[in-house]
Length: 210
Image (tube, rainbow, N blue to C red):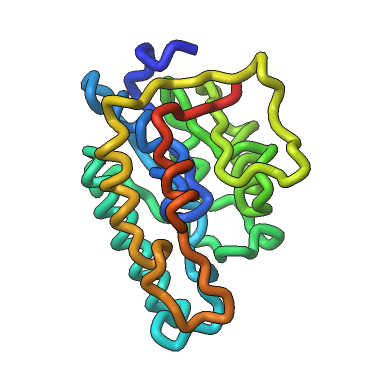
């Protein structure tokens, strides 16, 4: 697939921030050539910092939604093209298929970017399987959390996109996710995108498999 042929892209993100981590360069590439980008955020992101008193689930949910809107605006995606499905973060074993997500997937997009079925996060795999059979568009799969045992998609199915012209803006967009960059310090598990992860997430090449 030649990314230059994509003029109408749907990005499906399991959590608020995956859309930028996995597709921040692709989004800019499509927008730079006058294309349209629509984003669906599947879960509410409210479980990333369990036990935080400063950011209980309702506050974290609202904060992550604001962060996603700001980051995507930085990449040129209008607010009315960002759709939040609000399924429970970390609860993909209980996910059903929202009517709004079905409605998005039924549209005639040129391409749909989905989280990879090879991803090590259950929510990512679930988002892929919910969506994969419900779109006729070409599918690009992006991998955020590789398996530690090295399980990956076959290399002959890989599509590598040079995003060097868009790398700085992608990094700036990722900086909008303060809740994921160490702002929360009182949780039972204080997840934060550290510098090595940040560098990996903003590498000059985005890799997809078909």
